[in-house]
Image (cartoon, rainbow, N blue to C red):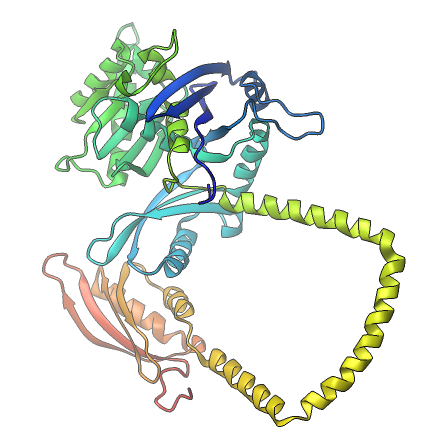
Length: 489
């Protein structure tokens, strides 16, 4: 949504959740949020087109979509099962440099080549000069296919479903906390989200279903069921460790619940496995509901409700994996429009020939004036000035290229803290290494990059940090011709 867009007063939001397509229309007026209606279709035998028709969004005869009513926007949720999440740390730098750093670090983490993946990222508040970065990544072909499937729904935006679930919990459930681990168990899988300051910082999906846990120990298969519970608890611990969770931190583990006995039993199982969890149940105090819509329905429609709340607010910095795909589609539309213009221009070919003749005669007169201009002293002075500007640009150092060259070698366990780069002097970098061997291996890697302009690589000092036990070091080196004292410009 751009700055010039008006905030919608009603939104239709839809997502595939618990093996069903679910949609709601939510209106916000005078700071009152109201659910107008809710619809649900089985996902196994239906498609997004059927859901769009059920919501009143029907394609016109010429293939273009029509809104169900004036001013209604729409948003669709993307299931997190096809999305990977990563967390990295980087120095606090300008936005343009940060984008280059994130792209570089993401390429080392992604399972496929960068041209087959799309990423979205956002930073957390900086601490000690560093920022934590959340990266979401998905296969580009998967995203293109999803965008094509939901085209009949005419979405104004596509948002990760886990962000919708987190938003619903913050607004429509009990036990709201700034930071929490959110667990949502469905009929197909279990979604686990780390929420920090109201935003999804990490997410993962388990294959455990509600049916796997609902009857724990209530029948003859008690031993098998106990094994399932133990495996679920172990999987939860593994995910929490990957999030950076430990028992000493004040991160509550909240299980989204409809208040029923089955989910309350799961909470008991998690606590028995030394995972301090409690149920978070729907709270309808901040929601105006239609007749027949209950607190149980708030739980059932939690994801589309959260997506609608996101769309009704100002831009919130959600992780947008579809930004480049949308831009490419707009470019393709523009190219198609230009092709139509070119075909129409063929009809005016005779006029164009006449115009060319006129332009040619005009150019003959212009060439004479140009020759007179070139002969003037002012022209030669301007040409020399442009030559000097090009020379300056050619010799200006490229800091981003230098960072890329430094990271191109063996840098396992190395974290750079600062970089000093000034014309006519050696480049100085400071950083930390996990071991002395990693530091020497990093220095040796720099020495081996003479072809890229690294020369006279030296370790000025090294010392072990008494707190972190890491090796702090300072390395200097000459880079290309920029470090020479007699360097031009």
